[in-house]
Amino acid sequence: MYKSLKVVRVVISLLFILCITAAFLFFVNRETAFFALFLKVQFIPSLLALFSGGAVAFLLILLLTALFGRVYCSTLCPLGVFQDIVTRVSNLFKSKKQRRFKYDRPYNKLRLSILVITGILFISGLTFPLVYLDPYSNWGKISNELISRSEQVMHNLFANIFPSTVFYRSYAHFAIGSFLFALFFASVVVIISAFKGRLYCNTICPVGTFLGLLSRFSLYKPQINKESCNKCQICVQNCKSQCIDLDNQTVDETRCVSCFNCMQSCKRGAITYRFQIGANDEKNIEKKNTEERRRAIIALGLMGTAIAAKAINLKPLVASKPKVTGIAPPGAVSIEHLKKNCTACHACVAACPNNIIHPATTEYGLEGILLPVLGFKHHFCGYECNECSKVCPNDALKPITLEEKQLTQIGQVEFFLEKCIVHTDGTDCGACDEHCPTKAITMVPYGETGLFIPAVNTNLCIGCGGCEYICPAIPDKAMIIRAMHVHGTADAPSLDKQEKIKVHDFGF
Image (cartoon, rainbow, N blue to C red):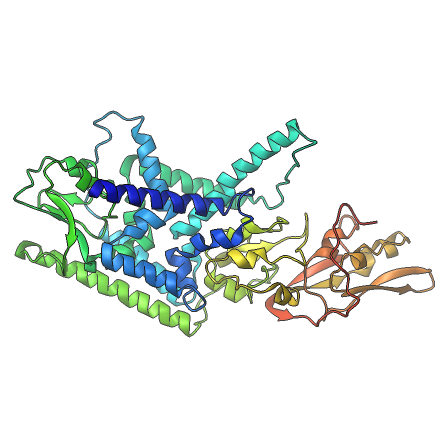
């Protein structure tokens, strides 16, 4: 039975990690609606989107934990599955003795401290610790910066070999800081997993700690039959969570991820996965159970307070006040909303067909590092595109219709006459007018020169960046999009608005 359960778990876990990773790959992530379903069935995204469509996924994860323990960590979490893959691959290069795990005492003070600090900051309106700790979001960064980047390198190699049939993809949104963080995080997880199995999950990850504390109340738990067990150590040697204590013949349920390795390997059937109500009632472990219950109550209190803070939209108690230079993607509502809900999974970065969304550095302040920000150096925000708002699982980018997106002001254009080539070179241009989809820019007579100069109507501007991208002024653009701290609504364009234009060069 346990062999069949393990096969089912492995199949589902592979399905989730493949589909979540595919959402960040260029050649398969065009089906945004399909892959977005897998992104939303993650703990932190469903928590952040609790009041806007994530309730079902969030309650499902809690229900699975209440029934079966930490099956989320072993089956649905892509980073958890990745750790298992690393452990299995590393075993191919180890001796039989080196492959054996042993029981390791939990680092309860460290793991609980990380959970409490992260929870308090989340309650206060700051989600930036989740940018660096949330398992799904970090897997998103790994997928986007390492796996997708490798895909792009291979694609461009073929483009160099077959230039007439394979197009070259530019590295428009490459961010060295985000790449280095993803590389560092992946390296740490690989090293830990290769030698210590699920140590990251059971020590650092706040999601693993929280679900582990809840698993104390789960209905199905692993249990060791003391009469059948001969302490042969086979189950311990196969436990990647290193949570089986044969001296006391107990399993640390807060660290067990229900992988079924121990049950499948036990020759005597001494360890089983069975229905239990409450904790074991042996007197010699009652003190430990009381301590675990106390921790679980703390976790539940943090969760309840966090949900309440989310419901009343509590503002951050502490935040930097930088000059806002970053332009948030459509659907972000405001910079504050983005900071409170985004964990920098970079699903929007991968989904953007024009490659204009990239990880921020200091555009939003220190607490906004790695969050998505728009740049118009290599392209502009497509008037007929709302892909980024479709894939966001956190509610950081609210889903908006194409009609809503076409009236959403993410920024406003500022025109610098002294930099315009009509003024500096005395020549006709009009590129900005030709590429403005809402006709916020029109050409008017420029004095007695016989030339025409741009005139801007900011009420029509949505900040798409078409004018900034296409402006031929060098080195400084004459058209610059300024960020809006709170997104607005533009006036509807007139019926003679510019239709969608395919840009090949400057459109002249």
